[in-house]
Length: 122
Image (cartoon, rainbow, N blue to C red; front, side, top):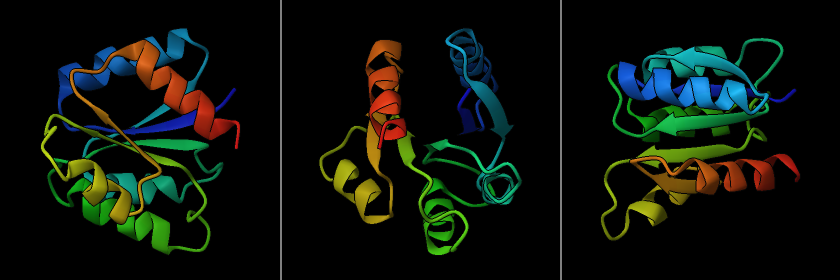
């Protein structure tokens, strides 16, 4: 069972997505802000994948992802950026921050699951 770290500050989004992922067989760990997300990324066992909201309190998703990807123990964990900001250049900014993929909100579960499966298969 793959461990997914969901870093999301919106309670409704967090609850809905974590329930749906658990139903699909994933072990889901939750962080409510970017600082907590960085801390939990380093906890053993390490997550197999991180879903990172980009608009977070404490540390935004861009900063949190850079820290995770800059640390030796967590640099190879795939990160999918989740954002409601589907503006031109956002995907490129997420990839530049170290994210391995990018998805927009509202979440379309089949599309997100496809991205998760692809990254976990690497």
